[in-house]
Image (cartoon, rainbow over all chains, first blue to last red; front, side, top):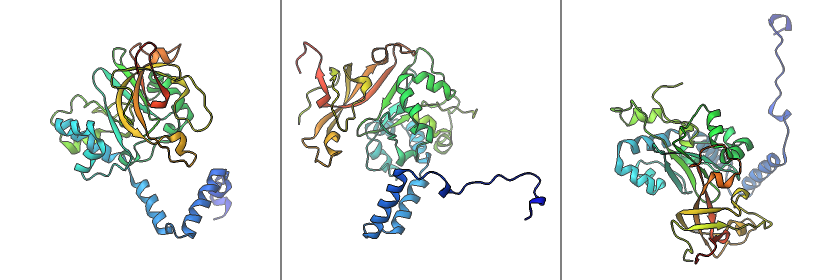
Length: 210
Length: 99
């Protein structure tokens, strides 16, 4: 294709290799190659692990929330032990214990990991970049209402905002309030309403999408 | 190891600044909180980080704090709280109470 055929200049996009190679990128490559060279894992197993992690989405967490809304006994079991309750639904919540924290009319919960980026990946997929940012990690514990406002979420003054900092062994999942107007909806319909952000706690679940 | 504290106990986080891998955030050190959940014994991450076995495992607690007590200029509501997981080696009983 000659330059004259193109109606506007097409900017040259750099290849991945043109970006910075950080110390930890190099270390990741080195450790991966060593693990494969030494036969500890195979290249195919590495590929499969990445595929599994990449395939995780908020869908399974959303299904658990929907069932908890419909079934008080399931909800009680989920509040007691999320990982065991997940197995009832053939969901693998992973080996790290997850604790569900329930939003009520009196308390709104929001999750952060100030130290790193601990996150219930097995139930809701990979964390968004903003969750891992220093801004989110430092500000959420310090001024949660201001951070929630940045997500368009205003929690009334008579509702307590409780921030959970996952500093040790647990990962946390917010069990959002069931939205008004959802009466009569079945588990699949309810599940479709539950977003990743509502299970982190930076938003609530509503019927209408904004 | 049997836990030193129970649900509802008031605890003070040690004001200390040891070197090495520490998971107790600065913003709760020296502050008072309430134990709301016991999480069993866990191997000490401060030791595990250096290839040691982290034994003896120590009781881990969820401790709840009032935000206006953590931050002098907290801009939210007086009832807002923060909950942090803290290992027993960082907890003291409140002054004058038996541990």
